[in-house]
Length: 247
Length: 251
Image 1 (cartoon, each protein chain N blue to C red):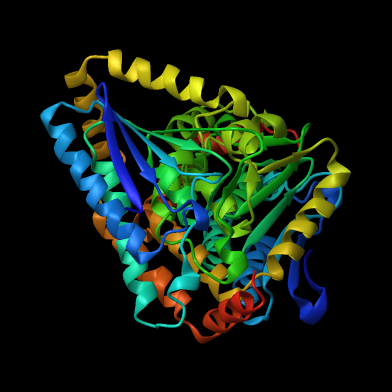
Image 2: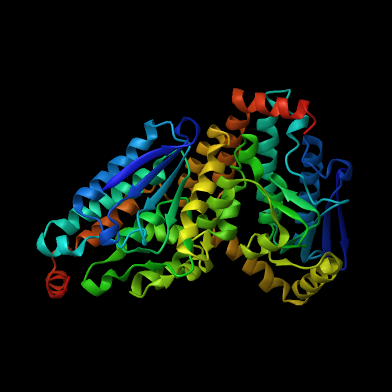
């Protein structure tokens, strides 16, 4: 359900694909753990750029709520793996491009927020609607705020509405917004190919310096954000709202 | 002089004056720029200057670091980068608003200078950006300033992707304040500086000082560390070899 492929000369571009199209790439705890491990393993792969992709019509619709509903431990596991994935992607000394066609919702949006360059399409659905089910998107707030600033972060974390790809481009969350979903992956791959051809040491140093400057390495804040979300798991409100979901 | 300062009716103009090299930042030119910005700071303290414009003589605002001038001496790039870092800190610390008038191009460290100014105005044909990674160099000195200017998310793409962008794109991402037709550039700069000069001088100074405090512009350590990181990359064998090969080909 998580596929890793290498393309181009010497496997210069790694592509990690969340591959569960029939469920809009909803993440189970196993998939999320596998995703975190796959991201971390890229460090030794020789890849010079990476693309994070989702099979089918939508990049990732977030956690598999059917699993969360059935298993009281699942949400917490997913939140921890999500944090590990984001940390692994951001810590890679190579640029990571998100091919977020169709949508990146909740946990899906959190993964995208950890990528360096975000490509999406106009109609894509992006955001954190999880307050509706009694889950807090706090886990993703530091990285989302790094991308768009605290003002916009506040709006998007507190309002469970989704925004379009076009709006994501306007607020600085997305870097490219294509007319159609079909154009997203080719664009992401073209950016990755171009970056993979650039001097490796300069790119790595630049990325790691940006990480240091913008708070990406601030484990205390990232840990606190995870705990803010974890604190609500299995709350009466969350259980009640998950139970009432008709999935 | 490779950098000059003039004051006219409370408006200071700091001119990069090495047009034959598209105002590329050489050690000598940065030395003159330091003298000019220190003089400007002193004049601004007296109230005799209330706004400043940074311009480049000739066809280009600034082509960036003159690495060609220093690549043969391993000790020179760290000094040049440290000098640029200190200049950006002095430029930002000026107690008056600053406007970069970007004609032709603002590349690498040159785009860094435009980015440190409070405002920048350019024209659609101008080329701006940070192609450092394309040359195997790291834009570490300008990174803290660009993050403050356009936010960390957009800065990540600009710096990792390298290359340059036209003036209208620079305006769209917030790297410059405005992009106007070349024929209207002088008028657009004057329109802005007239407003800056007409505003209450104490209020303007207090506001600029507060914004510098608020956004971490006083954090000299990050910019100085950027110079060290950048120097480390320039000094690496593969980057030195690549740059020498490039210069030998006359690029």
